[in-house]
Image (cartoon, rainbow, N blue to C red; front, top):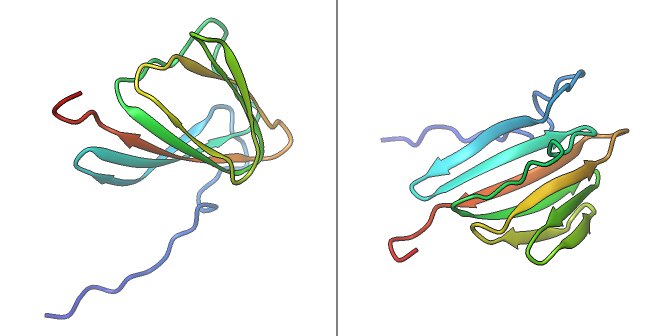
Amino acid sequence: MEAPPVSPTSLWDNIPEQLPEELFTTLLTRPGIRLERIVSRGQATPTGEWYDQPQDEWVLLVAGSARLRFSDPEQFIDLRPGDHLLIPAHRRHRVEATAADEDTVWLALHLEPGPSS
């Protein structure tokens, strides 16, 4: 049996001209993992809100710029293209800012907790 053809897609596909809110696109899912593309254009986490996720999240900033804020202890991290980091499960964080004049493109790999987590 012949394998189906393989064809590439682009991270730059299907980004709308108007982006009133962040765009989340799932690129790949497998048991225990989910890879998504996030496109931001000046968006930030709403004031007073924090992410507190049950899974680890690895993020890579592909384009643009972003500022993350962590609590307990408070920490600010500025990201430029090529920067990546692992956000441990339940580490409260928020996006303080993303570039307003260009697309900020992220890859986010969500790693579901294992059986011992």
